[in-house]
Each structure stands twice: as structure tokens, then as C-alpha cells.
Length: 356
Ligand code: NAD
Image (tube, rainbow, N blue to C red; front, side, top):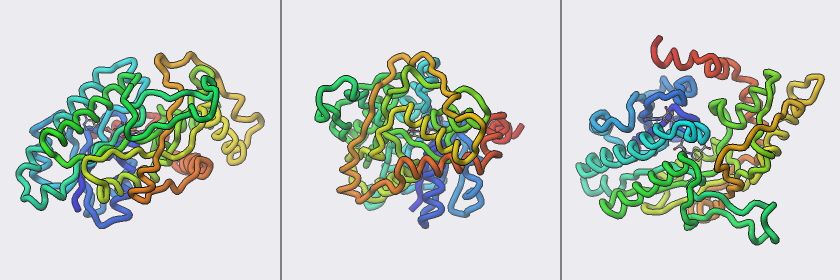
């Protein structure tokens, strides 16, 4: 099978590309614009594989998308390209509307035009897999606000959409477009909504890599508000495995929620990273002393938690990592991959990709 992966130079996309190249016989066409979040250094281990190819293309560029479809003739699309950082969506929503909504629309239309040219069997077998977030569901009751444990509900595939940030609203819009292209045009689509990912090759603007690198550099470890926001965390390689299962075995028209059964308060996450570092890279004072509390993000969702039982029952998928094993692996990866981190921090990964 030939899979067109959009956003394959990003954090999750690169894990998907590495997973497919290293564990299957399928081919990957990685289509990525290479924004600040796209880093080809995350793909060094697979770039010379003959089943891997790269196209630097913006998903908003219809003629380039048409060229890629007619050149490579994929059997499936896994759509991960997006603007993904909530804080950036608050200070500058325009790119989120453009890429996540207009880009998804443009990609759906290019896919539909190509799909319409396929023979009946190929048309039936084709998949458009849209990768989305649990943030489209808004937030859930927090333990502080409830009288009993039964009120601590989880997001299921039928939870109503109630996005809070420009990021989650743009992703919710893209999910609606994908469902409409299935219903209106019969394009064989599948959607997955996943909780927070963490792991190797994560851009250090996100909580976990930011905390690891700031801690090692003796910098402040910023925590929004009281740090009591709850997120469900999933190791990125478990997510990549889940996504491959969905695109190969999932049912057309279905939505699958993917999560790690790891509900943690942000402060717990940061304290766990600090304890791992205390053991691996000891210094005179504990890393937790670098924690500083900063003004909370506007509209900050208090709790997300995923019910991933459909993935487990219907596709026999479970995460392999616990939060503790995944987080230890992640910290060890950042300690062992200083060059990758340094190139991201000094911007040279950017110069290299732009050829300057
Ligand atoms: P990321 O920001 O690390 O990577 C996004 C990639 O998309 C980058 O390589 C970037 O260059 C590319 N891109 C951006 N705009 C583009 C455009 N216009 N055309 C082509 N490429 C473009 O994001 P990520 O964390 O890997 O997330 C991937 C997907 O998974 C996103 O759709 C995101 O909404 C979703 N998701 C992320 C998480 C998470 O915890 N990171 C959780 C659930 C769902």
C-alpha cells in the first residue's frame, strides 16, 4: 500500500512515517510544507529508504496537491498536517484557520478529484484518515467540582463538540468537513480523536519537552495557573501504531477515540519529570525547585479524558507504555539526542531545511 502522510515532518507525523517504514512493507509519501514545526531531522533514520519520499507542499495549494496525487497515486491519505500549538492559536489564529480549515478543505477536494478517477475496487479500498484531537470536545468536570466519582465522565465518540480555543475550533471545523465529504460525496473517510501525545522528537514549545530542556539548562519551569489542569497522556509511538491500525483495519465512516488511560495534573507531570532527572542527572538542588507559576492561559480547559474502549474492542489496540515507562523513555531520548535539540533551539534545523 502507498500512503500519503500529510504533516509527516511534524511530531506525530514523523512517528507515523518511522512506524510505517520500519514495521511494514508499505510506502510513504510525506507531504509537508515545513513550517517552523516541520523538521526533516526527525526522519534521518528513514530518509534513504526506497519506500520513503518527500514532497514539500502546502495543503492549501490545490495544483501542487493534484500533481502529488497524479504522480504518486496513493491508496490512502493520513492527514496530520496542521497548526497544532494552542498558545500560538490564541496570539495568531489566522494560520490555524488557513491550514486547519481551508487546508483540510483543499486536501479533501484534491483527494475527491483523484478518488473519482480510480477503478471501482480501488475506490472502495481507498481511505482518507483524518487525525484530530480530543480538544474538539471541550472540557470535562474536574475532580474539584464534583460530588461523586460518577460525575468524572470521559469523552466518547458521541460526545458533543464544544471547542474552547481557536486551535480546537479549527480542528472541530476540519472534522465536520471530513464527515460532510463522506456523507455528501461518499469519500471513504475515518476520523480519530486523540489525547495529548508525548515522546521523542517533540518540539520544545510543548509542556513535556519544554520542561525537560529548561530543567537541564537551569531555567524556570513554567506552570499555568495552579497546574491542576488534567490531561490524558499517550506515548507517541503508541499513537502511531493506533493510527496505522485505523487506516488499515478501521471501518469507513467511523470515529475512534485514542487515549492512554493516563489522567495527570500538569503539576504531577512536571514533578515526575523532575524526579526522573533527579535520578538520571543529579545536581545539588532538586529540579522541582525551578518550578514557577505563571498566569493561566485564557479559556484553559480544565480536564480532558478519553474513553478508548472502542479502539480496544474493535481494533484490538492498547497502549504499550504506561505513563511512567513512556516518560522515562522520553527523558532518556532528550538526554541522548542533544544535537537534535540543539538544532531546534538554535534554529539551524530551519536553516538546513530552507537551504541557507
Ligand atoms: P506538529 O505541529 O508537530 O506538526 C505539524 C506538521 O504539519 C509540521 O511538520 C508542519 O510543517 C506541517 N504543516 C503545517 N501546516 C502545513 C500546511 N499548510 N501544509 C503542509 N504541511 C503543513 O503537530 P503534531 O503534534 O505532530 O500533530 C499532528 C496532528 O495530530 C495535528 O493534526 C494535530 O491536531 C493532531 N493531534 C495532536 C496531538 C498532540 O498531542 N500533539 C494530539 C491529538 C491530535
